[in-house]
Length: 66
Image 1 (cartoon, helix red, strand yellow):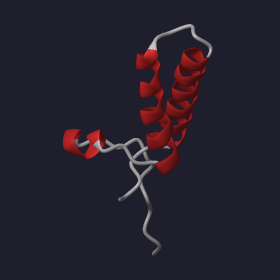
Image 2: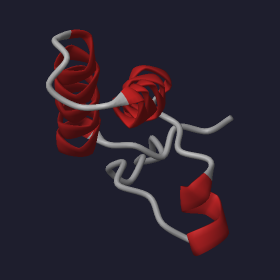
Image 3: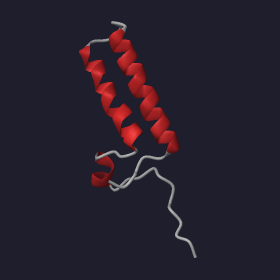
């Protein structure tokens, strides 16, 4: 798996996911809040399986030496 989730995207995914999980644990929202696990994992692994299907990547372009 080649990384396709960049820095800002990664941070936003992790924060949004943790907020959803926290709201679920706090009883503020229903069980659907557990979907927050998905953005946390995609942010942690820096790979979103939907991005290649859509031809997207938020990672900076890797520069080849030379």
